Length: 503
Image (cartoon, rainbow, N blue to C red; front, top):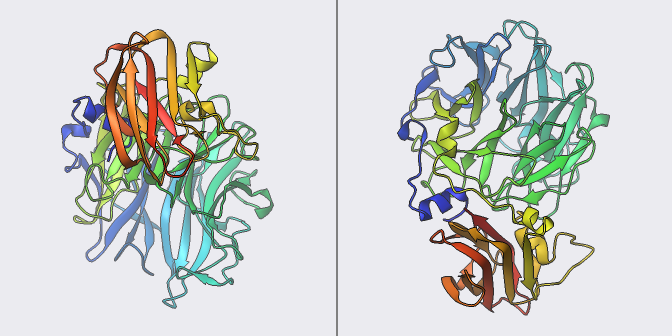
């Protein structure tokens, strides 16, 4: 399935690289489970003294009452690891641990707990935070994170009582010292899962429910497993797993108090991790739901350059595939400038494993996305279209909706048959990405011209459904215009959701 910039690389004849050139072999074993147990859900961070600290869940299966949390450390950049040490074990399932280090050196561990007894309905007991002032040597008692998504006494939906909260992303620290933890779950009276953040102003000792703010919510699909990154300048960005085809992205410009409307991305991401690098880029690693590499949910990554811009259309790297369906949930650390270690888990070997990669592996041979909207704002690109419908209810719909980098249905050019992008200066094009009306079948012809008169057909959609962009190869010659001409639409209104250019 052509989805991301890696698909563009494949169409261009570029072999999909993988760390170590073998995505089926791990570079290092971080920890191995006790007999009869499995390891899952690792997370790792780099301490102030340079050591790596990793945590993970051990249990007999993916979920169960025996789940406990252990930790290991490495003093040689992840090549060898210490003997595992238990840090959380209660009578219920303690799971999905996340770890971070504040600027003062305090280590914060977050996790959530589930009581699987009785068998149904299951009870989610909440999200908890522990603190360590000595690099994981000793830990405080857990404190519960306050949230409106709490109670567990509501009606049952999908084997759970409504009114629960869980976390999947690590805590982040803002420039002023406040801490934010991302949560997801349901209100006691609403089955639709939402993403929120809760704030601590005392170093993680308390997390009052009154500080909670919503990142994203809705009534069509679930918002799950939000992660947070603090960008240069203080902007916050959250990628959120959904039950829609792709993950959604939201931003905050006021320290997490308000959030932009979440927008669809081209990332088929689940159980992801966002590592902010020393140069300001973000290394995003995730469980890939697209099945473009295999039928599993293998570990895939994307280096987000300029994360303050669109996250779409950037190159993906297959990191690790254990060959099973229960895998991924990755985490990454920058062990040295431009050198990364990504952890995942392998249920075949009952172990947490790691693969190394370098920055040049993510960047080599990759076609670069062109920021069409920026070219338009600079007067270097014009749009000629009869798809001119606009609406105050959907402000991202309009002629520029097809070049805004947003794959959302309501961020499109709508109500017409022809969409043409004209470049002021001839532009080298190696590939195009075209998405028509998500969820519906449309027919169209994609053409380019180098002189404004003679048009060359590149691709023909014949009753195609393009939920994600179809990547189309171009020979690389300079073009002056690109045209998508719809020949058959579902209903009276045609739609171009996204037109992307790679050079």
